[in-house]
Length: 81
Image 1: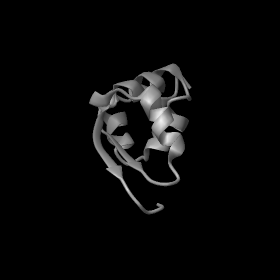
Image 2: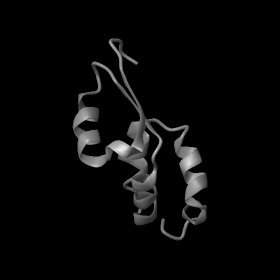
Image 3: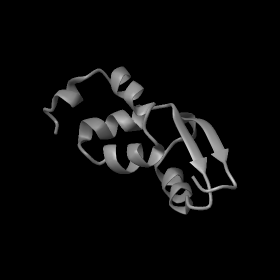
Image 4: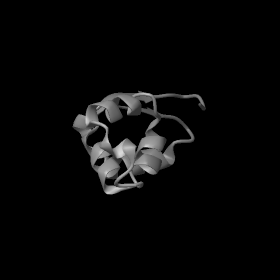
């Protein structure tokens, strides 16, 4: 994937695409594709996190992977989404 046209796009454009993805997609799918996307996820600083009763994985994963300065919003919901 390192030579894919996707990885040749500027990080700013990839980050704009991430704006439309949920945190699971970004952290669990995109981050593991290749070193270039891994680095782009690690520099993405507009994560919006929503926690609900089904998101126990999120709290553990996010606390290990994400730095606090990467998060722009944290929503704690009492409903299932």
